[in-house]
Image (tube, rainbow, N blue to C red; front, side):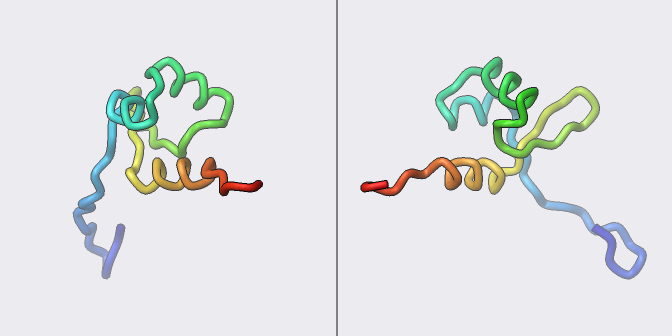
Length: 70
């Protein structure tokens, strides 16, 4: 983020694959497969690392919420 030409330190917490896999109840391999298929939660690539914003995981879960009677 830039503000008045100065770079502001981001305080965003990023989750690694293992943490997200545990949260979703799937394996890391499943997450990798979803990424390749464009089906999983939004992710960030930092070099070879894959990270997830907590809000991306919540959005992913919200999109899969099924209301009773539908």
